[in-house]
Amino acid sequence: MSAEPEPIASAADDLEAAADQAIAACGGDPREAVTALLIAVDFLEAEANELRAAVSKGYSRGRHAAQRDRKE
Image 1 (cartoon, helix red, strand yellow):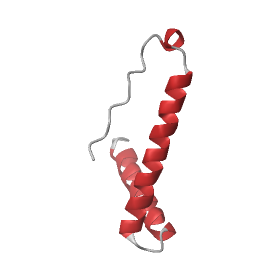
Image 2: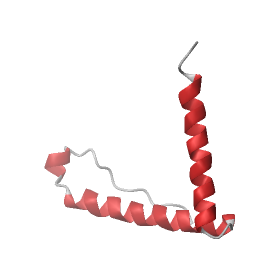
Image 3: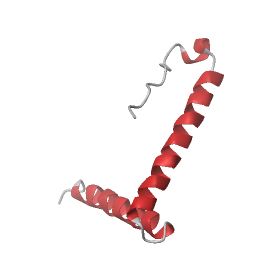
């Protein structure tokens, strides 16, 4: 009996449940859910960029490379 398959199945089930919740939160419209998630990702990327800019280069020892632009 391996404990490995169970966590993978659990992660897949969690992902499916999260997708179902996102769609339900958008009135059952999957397109609206994708749009909302893309907006959330853009917001989080902008926030991460602001935080990277606030951290001194000496403190981070240059580990934070500039954010690549996304293709439109």
